[in-house]
Image 1 (tube, rainbow, N blue to C red):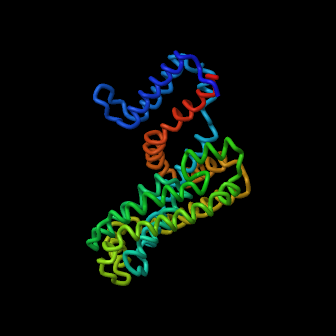
Image 2 (cartoon, helix red, strand yellow):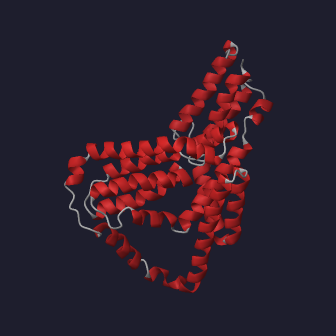
Image 3 (spheres, rainbow, N blue to C red):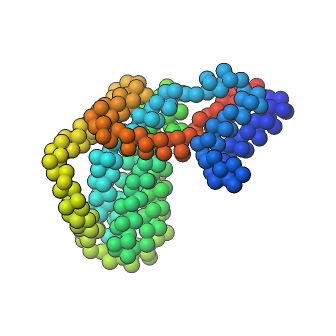
Length: 317
C-alpha cells in the first residue's frame, strides 16, 4: 500500500494528533471541548486539509455499524432499568464458597454480560455491586475490579455486539453472528479461565485471609433490597405492570439474540428491539436515550474518526 503525498501525510498526521490529544485528554485548557467535539473536529480537519474529499468522508460513515451500536446500547439501558444487572450482581455472592469463588464468578459473569451487552455497559453497572460487597465485608476490591475489567474485555470479543470494533469486523466481512461466536468462543473460554487463574495466583494470600462465611455476601444484598422496599411502596399499584414490562424486555432481548443467530440483519433487528422497548414504556424512553447519548456519543464517538483515519490509508494510494 503506497502512501500519499508528503503534504497529505503531514496534514493527516496533524489532524490525527489533534484528535488523539482531545480524545485522551478531554479537558485540554486551551481547547476544552471534550471527546465528542474533539472527535468531530479531527474528522473535519481531515477534509479541510484535503487529506480526503467530502465524498470519501461521507462514505466512511458506516450507518449499519452506528445503527447496531445505537440499538444494542438502548437495549442494554432498558435491561439495566429492568434490574438485569442487579440480578447478575446477586450471582456474585449467592451461596458463595469464599473470596476465590467470588472472583471466579465475577470473571465468568462479566465475560458473559460483556459479550451480550458490551464491555463498557457491563463494567459500568457491575462495578457498583463489587464495591458494595467488598466494602461490607472489609475486602480489598482490587482483585475483583481487575477480574471485572480484564474478563469483560476478554468476553466482549466473543460476539459482534461486544464492542464497536467487533461490529465493524462483522459487518465489513459479512460474517454471521453464529459464525463469529463459534470462531472466537474457544479462545474466549480459554482466556477467561487463564485470566481467573492468574488473578487467583496473584492475590492468593489476600483472598485466603478473607473469612469464608457461607451466604454472608448474599444476605447483604438481600438486606439492602428489603431496606429499599418501603421506598417502593408508592409503586405497588404499578408492580404488576412493571413485572410485565420486565418480562417483555427480557423476552425481547432473547428474541433479538435469536434473530442474530438466524442471520437476520443485525442493525435492523437491534433498532427494532430498541423501538419496541421505547413504545413499551415511554416514561423510560427519555432517561434511556439520555444515557445512550452519554455512553455512545461521549466515549464511542471516537470510533468514527478511527474508522475515517483507517480509510484514509486506502484513499492516499
